[in-house]
Amino acid sequence: MTPSLVRMRDGKKFMWDGRVYGTREEAANAEEIYRRDNFEVCVTEAEGQFAVYTRRLVAQAAAVQ
Image (cartoon, rainbow, N blue to C red; front, side):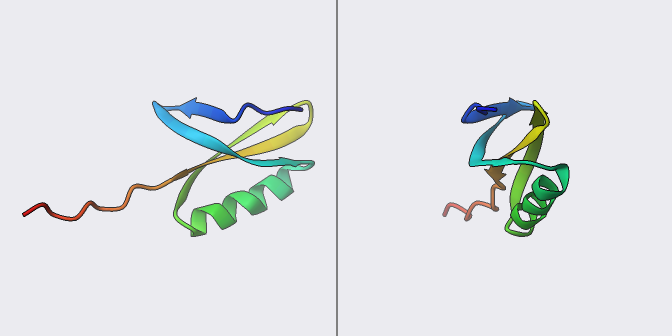
């Protein structure tokens, strides 16, 4: 499996974390850690392996004066 570096989902750009996970459980563990760190996460499966794609959640912008 060679995942693409970028995946689009719902009009949003997600970046591959650079790792291939051998089981769904390993990918789910990585997904949970990223979510705790305020990332949106997308997990894909191909050829029995998993790739995790992340996107940093946008924080509230500072008010312009």
